[in-house]
Image 1 (cartoon, rainbow, N blue to C red):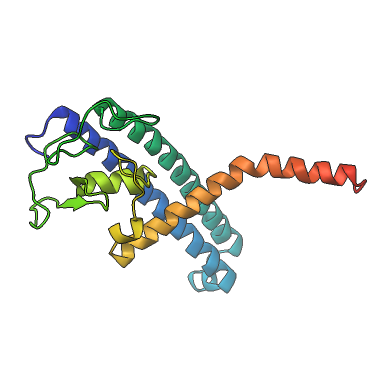
Image 2: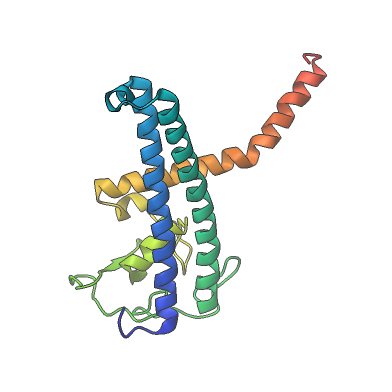
Length: 206
């Protein structure tokens, strides 16, 4: 990142910040889940910890992990849209205002130095199925942190399973899906409760 333009550094800094929040929320969620499981199995007795205390710790850790995970991904999606649209290579609705060269990353707008078949010292170059190339960190931040599943330029669907080869990274992808499901559950919960109450009222089951 030394010698990079401030605009390029800003994109990197934003993605790194949201990636840190994402990993911290993931860690809190895992710790909370394990604490709940250990308490249910009675392992807390080996450490002379009261079941109530260990269960409270697990529930609170799991809650904050999921809460900040959902909030962080939502803010990351908003920031990703804004940062990419300011470059002109991406438009939320409509066509991009600038044409993309083969050696330019559409996420950060900077030149791609490392070739596809070369091993970079800092990071590699990644090519999507649509043949557009990006800095590996940029496209991973766009897809995994920013919740995007399309190419930033042509909006062709991205195969995330092909992008994530490391089995340990697949757990982060699964955690992201859980956060999305939780977000939809919380968003639609009042509607579902209202429908159920309406059905009960119409059937006289109150």
